[in-house]
Length: 259
Image 1 (cartoon, rainbow, N blue to C red):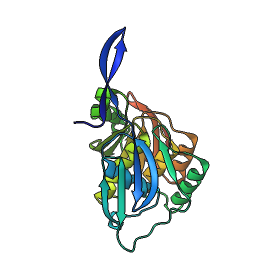
Image 2 (image 1 turned 120 degrees about the vertical axis):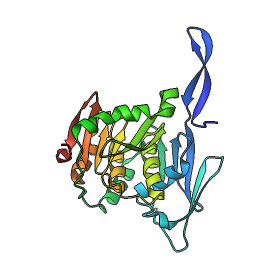
Image 3 (image 1 turned 120 degrees about the horizontal axis):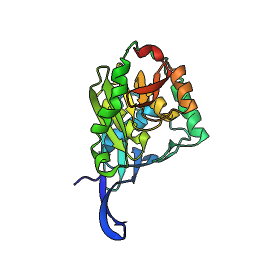
Image 4 (image 1 turned 45 degrees about the vertical axis):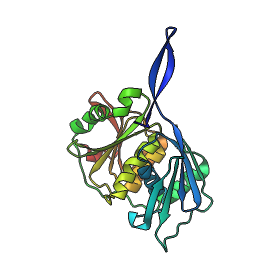
């Protein structure tokens, strides 16, 4: 049974029917006995989501710090760190909605502090404009759950030849990216040098932040970037393309990587 999709009753011109919708449910992320975050997500790849979130927030640095990750049916993921590994969460408590992810000035300030630990991308990867602008079609074709519901965001990881390496879907665009990065994190494939992150919607600051943490040099999206997303990409040497659709797009930062 696919827990990401739910059949619900609807009315179509007065006639009862059934429709498929994307599932949205809360997920509690814990480190040991400490509650760290609650996110509204589509069930599936919860281990990756938790790992990706903790890494992209700078709370953990490598998979070797993790002893175990367990999920239960009540919607809780518990991450147990190896003996001797400690983290400092400070006063950071996270509640993430599916629409905007981590909200609030305190959260933005803390994320900016984490990013200061990262250097500008020294990645000299390049991609042809024709390949970059062809990626949305490939991402859309691989969105299995969206095909049924029409209600999910997607994040895809591509190589420089335009081959799809991985895709994750979720009601929250930030969750889709965390799932993608979390999978690479647990497989010890970070940093993702020479890869392209493609987003099915708009580009916000936090999505660029997550890409910077994962070492991704090129970000493209079907939608528009925010001003802070552009500023962050410029600051950390990331290539940022928006409105990538129908074989064209706008390059907002790092145009030297597009050939």
